[in-house]
Amino acid sequence: MLQGVALREPLGALIAAGIVCVLAALTPSGAARAADTGSGGGPTLSQEHHALEMVCTQCHSLEMVRDSPKTYKSWYETVVAMYQRGAKGTPRQFGELLDYLHRTLTIIDVNSAEADELETVLDVPGPVARAIIERRAQRPFTSLADLESVPGVDAAKLKAKSRLIFFH
Image (cartoon, rainbow, N blue to C red):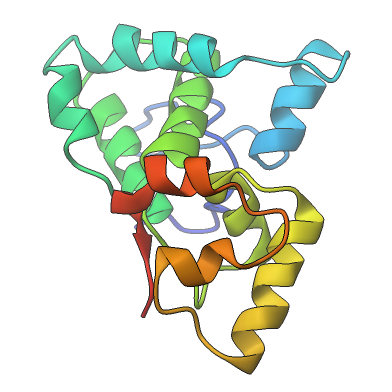
């Protein structure tokens, strides 16, 4: 386990000195993407997917990655391990890779996730994430249909991510 690393920050730079990893101090996913270009743009999902292809396919197939959804912490540890084993990429590519995995292949328990995690993984705006938290405080969610009842939740997006969404 990496000591003193904020797990919700994108992977900035990893350097090896023995087996010591250091992350550049970046803001959380969405803010980092906005700050990246100075225009509120930042890397697109397509650019982040390109980073996935460039870094991960050096050793294995994209199917292996897509078929293995994980928690954000597990993705982070996987990317660090890949780097330590010699995966090649720029600090920016590693950051974009981690952002991509966070937004597209991270599992989430909607009954316990924090607002920023709901925003990132479910691709909902802040007010909708807060509405999800307010609703679950009254009664935990039990299904996608239940979650879709929250105003502002996009049913099509939930259906596309259904294998990543849990109700514990």
